[in-house]
Image 1 (cartoon, rainbow, N blue to C red):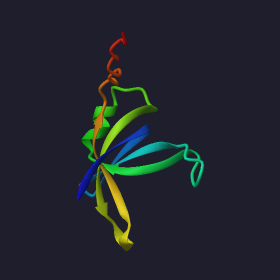
Image 2 (cartoon, one colour):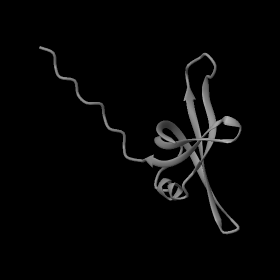
Image 3 (tube, rainbow, N blue to C red):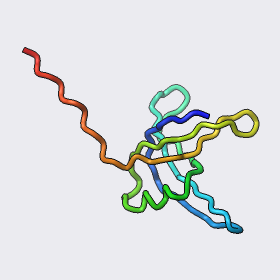
Image 4 (cartoon, rainbow, N blue to C red):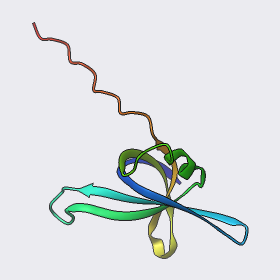
Amino acid sequence: MMQQTIKVDVLGARRVHVDGNTYAKLFLAQREDTGKDAYGVIPMTLTCEAELIDQLKSHELPKLLDVRVLLKLAGGGKTGMHALAIDTAPARPAPAQPAKP
């Protein structure tokens, strides 16, 4: 299984308890501007660790964040994603370029 970081707009999250089990899901929007096959904002959901919801409570959503996901094989040979972590740190400014003489 492989991990990857994706930059998405986190719209919201939900946690439910069913028969002693806890399930959690993130609601996301990914901006697509390729213009070829997708354009605009594409909504999607990801399963996630329940602790991520508590981590998001201190942020006003929607918000553009980096989400670390685990890529895994799903039914029918498809690839599924599961959110493992969210980088809620403020974005770092780009490093300053040295002045040219």
